[in-house]
Image (cartoon, rainbow, N blue to C red; front, side):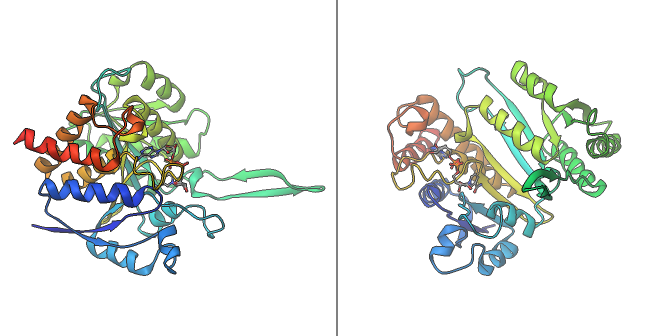
Length: 341
Ligand code: NAI
């Protein structure tokens, strides 16, 4: 069965890396048809809105979207186009797997998945200044929004993910010892949800600061981590760092029916147009999409080819210590399919 996927090439390095990812998926025989739509700066430059209705309709229709990084122009009217997209489709779960690609770093064989709540917490953006005397910005105040509903659905998602992917343990990360109401509610709900899975999935909870240290000292203790928005943002960069940085960090934003796959990195304006961007993170995002479509074998072939090229180290982009162009790197991945055949 062929799946139609909304493809947003994005801004900066986005069009170059999405073009190579599309080429690699085609060479791998992935049963995907693309429906290209713009968003972000690219849409504005063509006289459209930042998030054109056509693009939103296409995502709504196809339910799968592969998205290049988007630049939010300054003065756009909202904080981030990515946040706006998450809000529009209520993409409440952000899943970021961290898996070792290149052995020989600090740790080998890391395989940790962070499930981050994507809509609440401090990142809900409920904040304001309070003026005092002559200073209109004497105080800044922000609200950490945690709801029972939001905590329940993200924790359920994490456990369901663990069951579906054959994982053993879920660690809920919080700061309930200090933030007794907000983080306390998240923990309380998580413990309730965990009871439903007690026979199949081990459960533990940990304080966020201790988790950060333990992730660096002994990451093998962790399997699936579920946490609120800001802690998830920070810890998922930490786990990306454990496996070689943002160059290998894919992410998925998940709603009730809609999933948007992406690279965690941004549009890299400093190297845009130079043909040297690393397409790996977006390619790994596309592999997650293929997994979800039931195309695990094709996704596996792509991951194996990517790993072999990266481990070989001869034809890799400059961020990985090589001199290859984006296109040459993609060519090498495609050639590595032949070696598997
Ligand atoms: P960035 O991730 O774009 O770049 C940080 C550094 O990493 C830069 O030196 C860049 O050259 C390098 N880099 C990133 N991706 C790379 C790749 N694939 N290959 C080689 N090098 C790579 O972060 P920055 O500079 O903070 O943000 C730039 C723009 O991207 C901003 O407008 C920001 O809003 C947007 N952004 C978009 C995201 C998304 O669409 N998911 C996520 C993060 C930022």
